[in-house]
Length: 80
Image 1: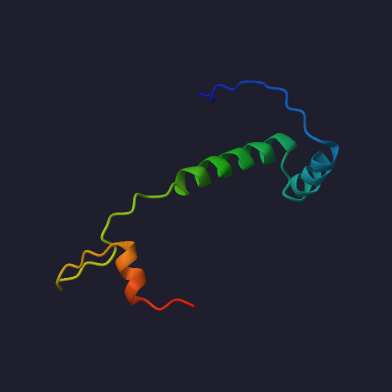
Image 2 (image 1 turned 90 degrees about the horizontal axis):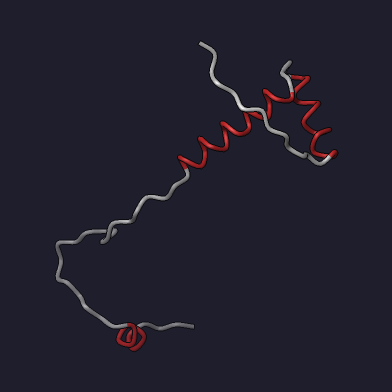
């Protein structure tokens, strides 16, 4: 069974269209195939690029816990 398709009209700047034609011809693909490939790749990358939540502490330690304020850190650290 053929996948259902929807026809749309997209305005593409002429300069971008000319950049599309050469790779499409080199890969023996139609303009539509190359555009659909770009959409698929973009969708796949957007799913992969989601950042995961960071769980704290980043580095666990069995040593004593230290609870310092920023002011206390600045008193003891030497900054330029």
